Each structure stands twice: as C-alpha cells, then as structure tokens.
Amino acid sequence: MEKRVVSQIASVSAGPPLHYCPVCASTVPAFRPGPRGRPNACCPICGSLERHRLLWLYLQLSTPVFRVPTRLLHFAPERSLRDRFKMRANIDYVSGDLDSPIADVKLDIQELAFEDSSFDFILCSHVLEHIPDDRRAMAELRRVLRPGGVALVAVPLRDADTTLEDPSIVTPEDRERHYGQADHVRYYGRDFPSRLEAAGFSVRADDPGGQLDEPFRALLGLNREIFFYCQRR
Ligand SMILES: [Zn+2]
Image 1 (cartoon, helix red, strand yellow):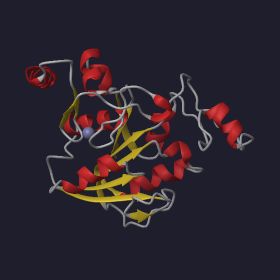
Image 2 (tube, rainbow, N blue to C red; image 1 turned 120 degrees about the vertical axis):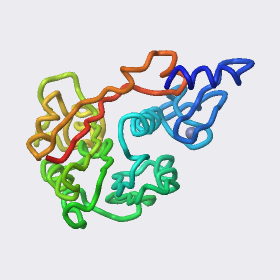
Image 3 (cartoon, rainbow, N blue to C red; image 1 turned 120 degrees about the horizontal axis):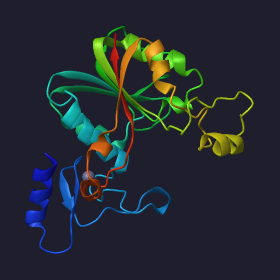
Image 4 (spheres, helix red, strand yellow; image 1 turned 180 degrees about the vertical axis):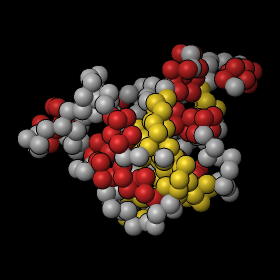
C-alpha cells in the first residue's frame, strides 16, 4: 500500500517533495510546526498532528472500523478526526469528554452513562494517564463494549518495567517532573498491558510506525507509538 501512495505522490510532484495527510487525504507542500514549535507536525488543511495521522492510517489498515457498521465511542476527541468520523456513513459516532467543548457528551470514564454492550469500538488515546482510578475506567470500557468489541488504547510509556505512581506526587510541578506533564497522575511502564488484561481484555501491542520505513513516515509526518488493541473477552 505504501509504495502505491509514494509513487502516486511522486508522480504529481514536479518540484520539492510533497507531503500527504491520510486524515483529510490532501497533498500539501509541507506540514506546519506543531506544539512547542515541533517541525513537520500539523496538517495545514485539517489540523491533524503526527499521532492523529498514524492513528487514522492504523484504523484504515488494521481495523474494520471503516468497513463494517460500527458504533464508535471516541474519548477526548481530536477535532480533525471527529469531523471525519462524522462523515462516515457506516459509523454511528459518539464522542465524550469530561470538559472538552467539542465532545458530543460530557462523561466520566470512571462511571459511564451507557448501557452494557453499547459499542463495537472505543478510541481511548492519551486519556488513562489523566484518570485517578484507571482500573475502574478500564472496567467501564469493557462493560460498555459488546463481547468481542475492541478498545484501542494509547498512553505515554516510560522505558521501565513498572508504572510510576506515587500518591505523594500531587503538585503540577512534581507531576511535570516525574510523569512528564502537569496533569498526568502516573507514568505507565511495560506492565501497562497487564492492567488491561486484568480488566478482561485480550491485548495486542502494535507498533504501526515501526512497520513503515523512514521516508514514508516523513512523507506522511508520522510518529512512532504503541497502540494497544484490546479485545473484550
Ligand atoms: Zn489533513
């Protein structure tokens, strides 16, 4: 698939190399700088960032979300993705967040106001590291998924075997120093999937960016990130 995209883009590029955003399917001369001035980050058409484009590509290539009727719950929706999910005829889409103004419903992931088995697929990217009781949140994700349904989960991961989680780390300054961001409440380690398994999921860790070569990642402005594909047992 990637060779086809690269050759298509190369064939229309007479001058400097172009870039391609898989979210809005646009060919652009360059991505704009992103948060903290990070270069080659933001799509000038739809506003997607590197991890949004990686997620979108992964959903297209490695999940049935765009191919079968899917009731989809999207936590902490990113605007560029939300707008395009809503355009898809096969997707019955609900976005939710505790306080995001662009979410469809206000919800607490630790206590979801949905019936059991309400969804086929859940997107939960960069949410659990903010949640005080993440095990309860994982149990809620499982409860509102139908049997066999999938939660796609991503979190920041540190290079360590265990999750760093210390109840004495409470100030924004200390959280920034230990967890990497002022509003994070832990920093997950390689034991993260075991928490998901304990909540009743079969977990597969995917590294979609690692399966693409560097020129292709640069062309699409993609990052490297682990996606945990969590199927409800
Ligand atoms: Zn775009």
